Image (cartoon, rainbow, N blue to C red; front, side, top):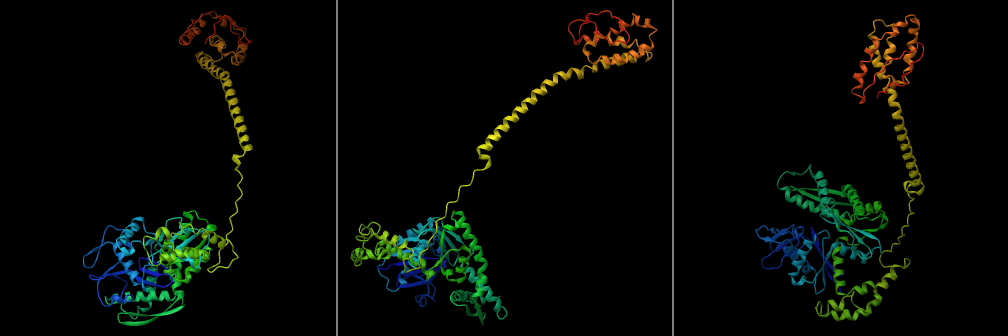
Length: 573
């Protein structure tokens, strides 16, 4: 039993009757008041040549938009309704469409609101209400697994090179399940390549044609279509020619594959950087990338395959008709959804077991009484050997296969654990602790020693200033600097007991003058001067000491001997 697969693209619609026929038309819908709409342009669809209708374009990218499109006659239309009408027209465009199951592949980069809007529009049409709706990335991988084959495990990067952009999808090779959202890359597309080729052709035709007039607009549109056709021919040939008819002047222009490659080289380099970025963002290591699958019209360009293989160093899987891969996969998914071909596709040995169930279902078509529960291969109890048969075939790498050979992957070896850093080792931690303890002990000893030295030094540094400052005024007041008797009264002041250590140096300097003037000892017996010297002590002692000073009579000193304070003299603070 075969199925019908449909794929939705921004530039074209594709319908495939699996193993029978395929139709591909431009995404242009013509509405008629008395008959169903038609898809395509008059050059593709003969039914449009006899009658004119209301033409609507650019509606695929508007699916899910709550704002309706406005046609040329002022009528409004929802984009998802127009897309559903176009899909139904594509089913009827196939030769002899029957009651086969239908699968529809929508763009994988669509958001959930757009998918739900299309699902609702399909439900309103009875012939598409039971269609299987799936992303085109999953459908394309399904087709590539059937022909030419995919790795049994690892990650597969699917690159869908379409007319308006390229989609990148990472999927698990074992279950064909996407492992990350699809990324849309608009800088590599068929339209951009067509535009670059058109500019290249116009540079050659600029000398013989006038491109400034309004009459050249229609000619440029036709010339762009010729550039697109020339690009498709250069996928298989190395040289082609096209006729440039601009403003009534014709010119034969020769194009080579090298010129197309020059146009594609820089966009492909940027696309490779985008693939690496997608792999890095999703945590896929290079050893985990099993293969790169390419679909869409751009996958037929040889430079795309060689560039991806050279830089990514993995197998590049491309089907014989990459532009039909999504539609073929949708048809296969529709058949497997009914259980009518899944068992024979995976394990031919169990086909006789499932054949009676499938044969019983063929006369009734898609009858609800026998479709879903009885034919669902995942719920059938009589085919438990499907998966063992597949695993047995894929685990033997030496067994010949109908498709491409299987890939054997080496398991990555576990890297040795890195040594712990130095700051985490026990010896380093112990040494750091001992060093910290020794440093703390040293700081404590230094602080204690500094505090013990400060009290002993403070009296010695402060006491000498008192006698020096008080002695100088008394010596300067003497009438003659050589009078020795003036010095002894100054040293008899009450401050002398405070300067026991520094007192001897002044006393040693005083005796030499005293020895020269030894004959006049009566000068030392002058009683009146001592009362004058005793007047300063009350002024200096009153504010500093609480107890009163008991004055005592001075006692005589012997010249040449150091001064000895009286034991009865009170000590001043």
